[in-house]
Image (cartoon, rainbow, N blue to C red; front, side, top):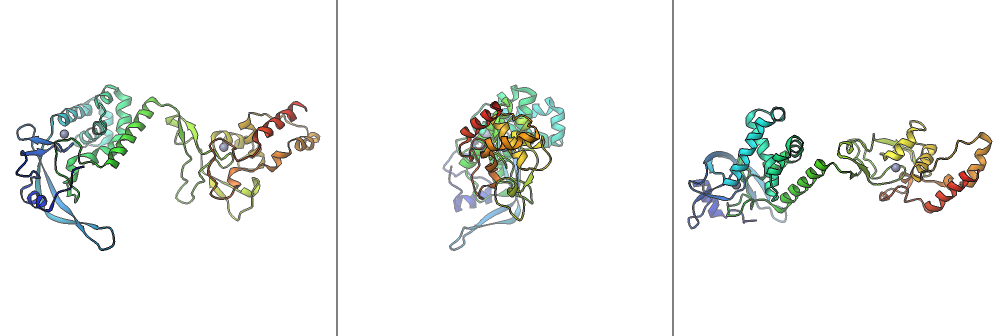
Length: 352
Ligand SMILES: [Zn+2]
Ligand SMILES: [Zn+2]
């Protein structure tokens, strides 16, 4: 990261629009990567800043950043050859993907969106051409992941419409103005995009809940903290937010329900019994995980079956454990003696 502008540099910048010191070669910053483009080597574009940020030191606290209006201030930018090639490809995509473009806005806006999209792989040192070559699917997936990020990476976003207090001088190195945090976020987005393209299964934690209820971080019954899902199922693999009464699930009664989600295995088991989450659904969920199918017992055999599987009567759902219990890595891991229990159940069924 190059240092922010010194007060002198600020003064020069705000009076001349140039951030280059007299002792460095003159040039204009590339509006995207911020690299210094020598005069005559790129197009010239003028943008206007209407506000600037000021840092106000505050004693014994973080400085306050204020935005103040300034007289409209024109700043000249250029484009380096690499960013120009990338932006040309982005402009071509507007015509190659007319329906995607229309969904983005008018032509000018769509062009900016495609430019922002191709900018992300460039920042993380990947070849943006592979996205273009990947065709329809890769362009759409990349658009979904990159468009919200790409615009923030442009050097021009440091000076327009607001001249930021942390604006940095153009240098000889591309993307030097970006913070490590931002580049990390781009890397993550790139990885997400690749995962979506290959659509391999992924581990999905339960949703956070909604604006009224915070969901527990594991399946209400088995307590597992992630479900495996393909990309297109990731948003609904956990089903709807549900309330459960821990008093019915081997725990203390509470004056209110607790809220969370069910993993697919537990959700199927519960659905086979009834709408609510009760002790029968909980047992079915455990049997489903252990891959045990208890036979339908005649009325007079129920007591006997109950005796041989006495542990099941002490079964506790994960949501009935003390608040703050971390989610399980594998389903039902909070049940001690899970192996013996499974064996007991199997032999009880076999010996019937
Ligand atoms: Zn550039
Ligand atoms: Zn579960």
